[in-house]
Length: 220
Image (tube, rainbow, N blue to C red; front, top):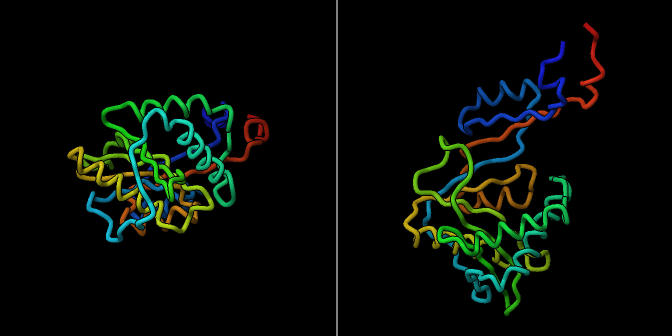
């Protein structure tokens, strides 16, 4: 007899685990679960390294919506590559992405930050209220969201400059911590975020069952 949720075709199962409990994590790994995302946090102290002099960061206005959309799409395309392999939905999500960016730009407790090099906008990050389980969100936190840098501008300190400005934005809004999610399969962002002082406090683990299960099982 199949469990009711499997019989209904619910084959992707997710658990959230505190990052410091190794024994509990091992028990779930033994059941076939693997890490998918990390929820990480740090204080709002400025980064130790200064932003390169040719990188300028500003808060976006509605006139910057088009470039913000391009950079959000850049992040989605990057996440669709190996080894992350997220589904790229492009046109299907464009309208929703635009609305979200408009709300972030207009909101009093959120912002879209744009970075430029020699006058060309090449990177973006967003700041807003944090998302995630309330047990793991520090008091007085901001959430850093969509973060992207065009391929040809990587390695020039753009990402770090954006994060440093996001931390400053949090201090200006009397917050005390910053939080974010990143894919554990993202070989670029994982060392980037941890190298800037973000410590995982929560793991998202997933197990995807065999898609044949709803019909390929012993009959009762």
